Structures are given as C-alpha cells and as structure tokens.
Length: 77
Length: 347
Image (cartoon, rainbow over all chains, first blue to last red; front, side):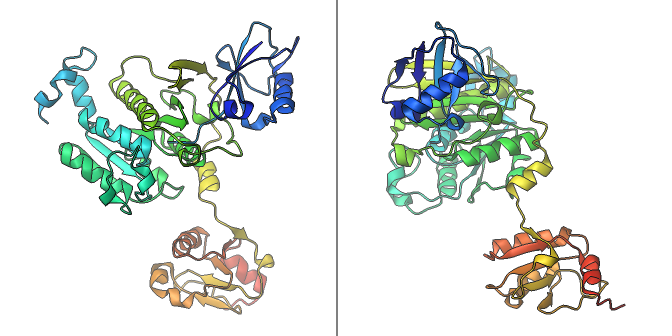
C-alpha cells in the first residue's frame, strides 16, 4: 500500500512516499512496522486512511488499495 | 469608520455593508507576535476588524527579522507585542489594538479569552496549543490554528459550532517536535500559513464559505500539494473549568502530617479570626497585607499556607509564586482542622 509521510516524519524516514507490503494488515500492524523500520513511536504519530484520521484504539483493517498518510503535529509558527 | 477604505471588500456579495459592520464589531485575540502573528496582524487590521489583542512576552531578536516583518533592527530587545501594535496602529488607526506583553498562561488565559470573539493561535509551542484549546473549550470560544514545519504547514478551525477540537485531532502531545528556530523556515511559508488563518477568521466572522472544521489542511509549499485530513469529533465534556484549573493552575498541596521541620506555617487569615493557632515557625500575615510584608516570609524554607476555607491560601500561593517563591504548599487542612491536630485550642 502507498504510504505518505509528512513534516518531521518524512525527515525521519528520509522519504515522502513508501510502498509498504503488508497483507491483510491492521493499523496496529502498520504502526508496529513503522516502529521497527523507522523507530517511529506510535504515540507520536497519527494515521490517516484515505484522508480520514483513524483512532489508533479502533485498530482499523487496511486494504492494499488504501492510501495511508502518517502525520504528526507541527510546532513552528 | 470610513466606508470608502473598505469599498473593495464591501463590493463582494459575501461581505457587503452588513459583513463590514460585523468585522468592525469583532474582537480577535492573536496569541503570539512571532512569524504567524506578524503575518496575520496587518490583514486583520486592514480588513477593519474592530478590536485586536496581541499577547506575547517575547522580545525581538535579530534572527526574527527575516520572517517577522513588522520589526526592524532598531526594535531588537523590545517587546514584540508592543512593537507590533505600535506599527499596526500607525498604518491602521481605526483598529483598537491592545497588547499584553506577557506569555499566555493558565492564570491569564480564561479572563483574556472571555474578552474576544475568536482566538488566533500564532504560537510556536505545542504545549501552549493545548492551553489555548482547553481555555477555548472552557470559555466557549473558537480558535484558528496554524503551525509550520519547514516547507509545510497545517491549518484548522477548532471548537466552532460544536466542531472538533485540537485534542480530537491530536489527543496527546508528542514527546519531541522542532520549532522554526530549530528546524528552519522560509518567511513565505509562515506568511502563507498566517494568511490561511486570517482567511479562516474572516469566513468564521462573516459566516461565509466552508470553514476548516473537523478537517486538517496540510499544505506543502515545495510541491504546492494540499491535503485535507478529516478527523472525528470526540466528546470533550471532561475539559471543564475544574480540569483546567487542575491542569494549568496547579497548586502544590500537602497534608499537615507531611510538613518538614524547617518549614514555616503562613496563616493568611485576618488577625481577629478564630481559632488562633499555636505552632512553631508560625507567621500570620493577612492576605490583604501579604505583598507589603514579604520580608516576613522566608525565601529558603518551605512555606505552608493555610486559611479558614482554603480559598485565600490559594490566592496567597499565586502572589508568592509571582514573587519568585518556589517551596510553596497549600495545606490540605484549614485553620480549624490544624487547630484540632495540634490540640492547642485557645478560645
């Protein structure tokens, strides 16, 4: 599935998009994958599935065609 | 107000004379006079917003000047909120400008927010955004948010007409984030973020267009891509005045049994109040006289405050906190309970 990284997350991953291969994965599995691959802490990031930010507690099931965004709050101003 | 000055925006069917009047009667508080604050202030004033408040305790520095374009080198070291208002007042004398040269805190936020119609978040610290958010919920105000990371920025309108809040989007603060000072920023990026904020303020006040509610706009100024990410409104009933006071107006409390021997008991009741207290290291200074009697309050020892009900001791706590005292505690017991504990009742 296509994963887009924004802000500081893109700096940590070193890329703005990724093709992540996870079959029949849930949001929890994606978070676990991001933690093991990029050391992204689940508490510090937010996941949008097809432009809808999902609650991490609900553990939404993901489809191969879903467009994923990994977001975090920005501080600057 | 000269209508001719605003005739080009009055000409818009979505604005008109009634819309211009709405803007003229509106009160907007800008929290922060940094990059975002500098971007929003000229346009709030130029569009004819009647009353504009600016709160910031920071001072101008040389590294601010590339993006905080209201300031010049001669302003370095001066208070940002005061200088910004002075510059805006010269160009837009109709606007009623009020500057608060202090940082937004749990102590001043509620009183200040109550005086304005909408709050504009122009800060550069995430913890202050939670303070703004929670103060807006308690006072029933909406707030427009923008924040910047390098070439990207986020914009949203929170707590408007029962919409989602900053906590619905980001329930908890991340452990680390970088500010503009650390990450770097181009002046154009922060200016664009500010202009999106002002635009949201105008839409909200004029009740036109589609407000950025329950959805975060994320703009990448390098690719010119824009993404909207919707989020669910969550119940925020727990953000009450009591929650706010506990979260942002924290008072250290201590039981009498846990006091240390080197501490001083400060009774802030009036001198004729009963019961009288007999304790070692006991000082009685009525709350009304406290500020004039600070020489009687030791600075290096713990201070245990109490009164008859617990109300005045909290006020005294804030006064002493403001004077730089750090080892402060409000006793969980009041004078009557302390008297019973000490078994030294003097009728």
